[in-house]
Length: 132
Figure 1 (spheres, helix red, strand yellow):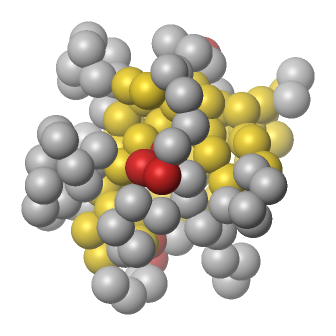
Figure 2 (cartoon, rainbow, N blue to C red):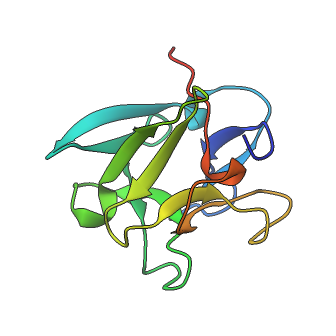
């Protein structure tokens, strides 16, 4: 909801980590994710673009925990709580650090990278899901 763009696992931003960013105007493989049951009320996300699991990855930034499609297994950093908001949007809460996922313009005003760095849900922490 922050900028109205699709989230992509964007190989062009990092060939190694495929960071997630809300920077696309159309849907292709990089903008598709499989939602999977990760047990105990959690979900995990797998990028259709590279087949890797999405993590809120403290190794990439201990402050912001950016999201990246760079894992082959599900652990705490790859688990999220799916929250259905009253306005029909969805928010995600990272299990790795207990923070909400934001499309964060302050980290990069061009690409709006996703990061687990918010303590509350606002406009940047809300996402519209399209089932395909």
